[in-house]
Image (tube, rainbow, N blue to C red; front, top):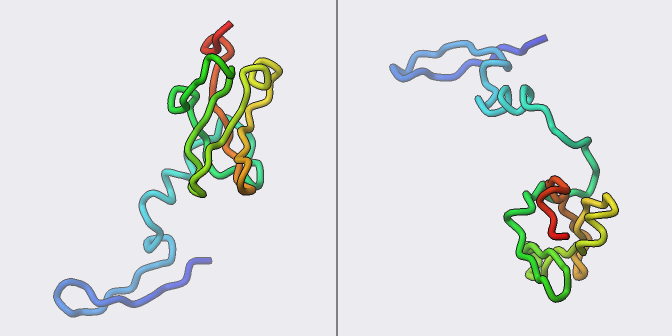
Length: 105
């Protein structure tokens, strides 16, 4: 059930709005978007592999963590199907979005 609320309009008159009308526009858009991956608690962000830096010598992908350190995931982990990069300094994790065709051999 929607709840009616009263807010002044532009001419200082009061107008009733339902709670569904008060939702931000992006909320409806977000409900319509379907995630390609299932929700996982503790995932800070989904990161395309192209946004990560790659160290060929270490075979390591990295991405900046808000704590100041770097999320890390190895090429071997990605080839094995793991898509979660961990930050060694805090508890945050990111999901790496990639196709195996994008990975170096």
